[in-house]
Length: 172
Image (cartoon, rainbow, N blue to C red; front, side, top):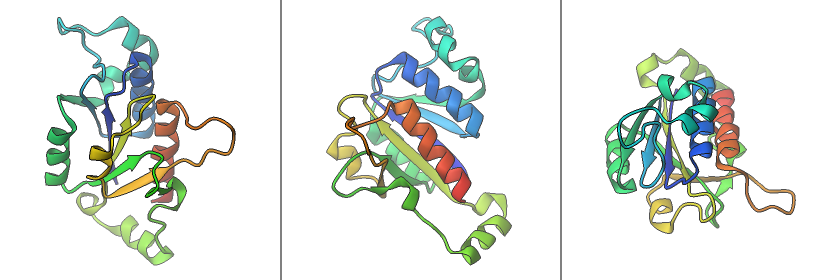
């Protein structure tokens, strides 16, 4: 299984650095940084100290690419055959842990499939306070949600990324 992440207009350099660290630990193959999402490099092409403080070197081990708009990265992901999964609260969303629960026979087939034929997923995460816009959600194949049981309506984007990435890895 191949998992890539898309951070769409995530504003905090610390959140993005933390996502890089989680992605390194989980074996995510690439992170696409979209719009105003900070990159590991400053405008002079040097690694950012504030980014590195949180990423702890993952900014050098996880492949990444920056796109100006979601439309650009969407075209690339679709051309690569990715199933595009938004992680967002929406009336169309399903609990993340129910996504694609395959039967035991399907799990065995996936395990035996050649590496190149396994599923490729792109997980899309949005801006910290507003989340993903409707225009992005409408392009996604599925919308996953982390149910909130307390009074808070959301989790930090890096925490949400860790939960969903590891769930996909464990379930497949």
